Amino acid sequence: MTYNEEVMEADRKYQKEPTIQNELALERAKLKYWEEQLRQNPGDKELLRRVKYHREEVEHLEKEVKLV
Image (cartoon, rainbow, N blue to C red; front, side, top):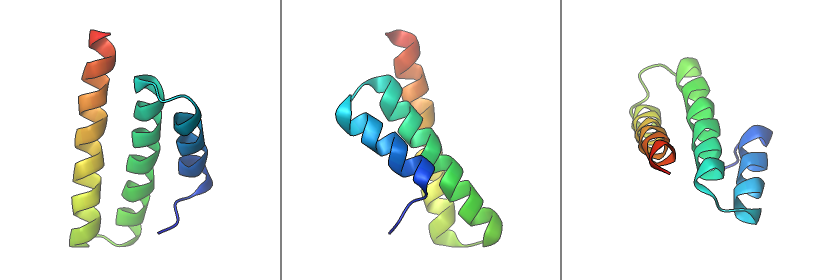
């Protein structure tokens, strides 16, 4: 699977500096990517599953950032 440049850049940044903020930025980029894919293919169950997963990850990491 190949992500877009935005996700790949966020991943490179996270790999260099694995902070919660960088992980959150990566998950937000992935969520945006999968939401765009879902808009192009509405009703695709696999895409729905991926959007749900990354949305939950973003929510979890946002709570972590607030606790730090």
